[in-house]
Image (tube, rainbow, N blue to C red; front, side):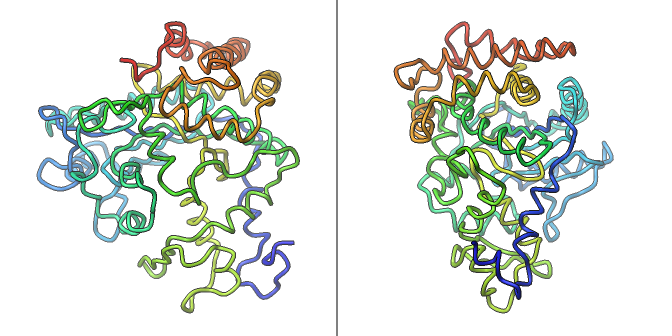
Length: 419
């Protein structure tokens, strides 16, 4: 039994940690999408700074005024905007992220993005800025990208110890998808399957071979950066075995070192001095663990797939030209159809954890041209995409059309990085 599970005098109880995921069970089948793009100067191609008259802070300020968005502040600094359930946030290196209210239909996600972009782009034109759909900044490297003035980012940059953590924080942009789960059993099945799929999806959407103006030799340098950010909080959350439960995920997260906590509008650095389990047991410099600390700690855990009050599938390079909408469509076709899930499980379930883990490293370099047990990843990707396409077609909502861009690419034996 986990220590905190039996401890009676904890300010924060083990079951409260567990409840955060149990309460995520819901009957809906919506899709969420987080869409990061890199803002660059249209003339120079360099990443746009947060600072200055034509920087991202001033752009957010003007867009908020023009389109009636509210500020998201860190201390006195504008770090994002919000309107109802949609948010715009700036990532550490000024990456521009849209986080949209989950929808039942992919078309509604597309419509919302296009609506926001149509209001935003005239202001961006005035500022001489464009948002590019790449997984890594093609020209500007982290040494020339200042962190935005968000307190947590300075602490994270100081803590994350991987040799490419600065690249990950300041240069990369990706697309994440959120899916619902109905029960713990449903959640674990989807979680395990999403982990098996992840390296194949990373391969299909590889789009970050150019960095600092040169070909890196990797199809997804962004994926490589995540592999070299922090092994204690990146990678796979579990070995996605049969019999896994929410408790397994909680126990794994309890053993992850903490980066910081928030108290009284200030950020207190822990810098990995203790795990969350130790924080619950002993506290830290007079602070006791509370549920907000747990939520923050969970959000500072960056595996390929993670639990929130939904399942977040994370490791896709940013792509454009319609490919961005094929990503949520791909998961909707598989994850909301039990027969489709079974077909994918039959294809991928034979691979060992060690093989899937090794594949993460191979696809960052070779993308769909990687192999697993002598089989081309491209051929497996084509099967997965076809399963999703047929599932969407059978649902009769005309959403299979969103899969066509990725189908066409795979037919040409290509990925976005090849263009």
